[in-house]
Length: 239
Image (tube, rainbow, N blue to C red; front, side, top):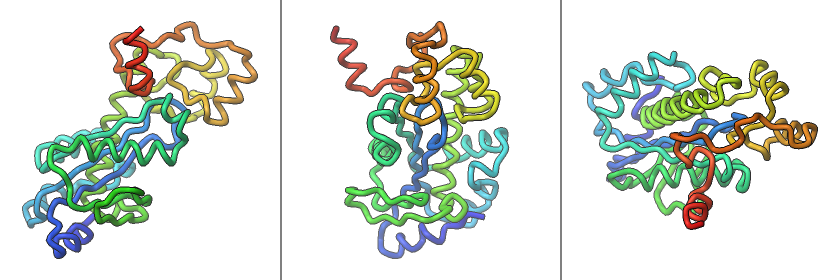
């Protein structure tokens, strides 16, 4: 069960604005990587009671996550997400992509944090005091809150992608390599939202010799950041 112990340690150093950070989508075969950042208010008994159901997002049902996410948005000093697109993931690899997603989430906060709490991995080059905690989303309320915000936001993105690519079941598998997802890839090929640098997808592309699902263009009405880095979007707009 998460607590405020890690946050209180920073507060004793007069660092009151502590941002929890976590990311989701690292192991997925399709879709963006999303990081969440949350600064919670001072931990009081009332706050603890309000957050009693907040836990590692993976331990909650979808309905519980949505309820917790609404509560977090209402209570937080500020919250934000950072998105790294599929194309950026393919170019950068997971380590840099994770750092960039977290950096974008921090920069999107309406109030600048004074310290960071992260799940497992530190954030290099950040000048802020920070602590990376293994299984941090089970230890810190701020990290657990960030995990829930990131998870619910990414799940919504994958539901939107599922409407454009219904063959792949993104609404249920969230882009992960389930058996059903693998069968769909064999039957319909690879889409622009699949991470083509990932070994299973790369092997499919090599074997298929260009056989792809018919709708290989970017779907309409879905944000380009799900697929393309911003520089590529700007270049396309300039042409």
